[in-house]
Image (cartoon, rainbow, N blue to C red; front, side):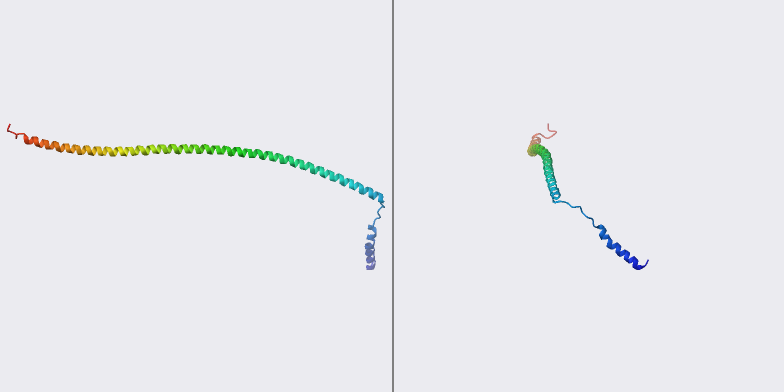
Length: 161
């Protein structure tokens, strides 16, 4: 076979392909078209109704879920409020105990300072009293020495008697 024959066969092959692909459609009447459209419209309406029903059902479910969340959050809020009240009560008792401790410590410190002041004051009075006694004893010692000196002068010398 020659090149010309091959070219003609290829050309016939490409030319015949579109003719084979065309198919004849059966004839549809206007009535069948109207009935099909009405069935499609009814199907669309039933689909819309189902979608609306599903939407309402989903909304109801979401409302139920929302109510459950709200009740759980209310429970959690109540627990937080209870914990907050408990913490406030504990801080109040700690504040009260701390105030009592500070008050007792201040009273004890006051007593200790007063006792220290009294002891210092008493020690100062005792020191003054001791100084007064020492001066009194020195005065008495001087007086005794003077009297002893007078007695010795008044006594006759040894050997005279």
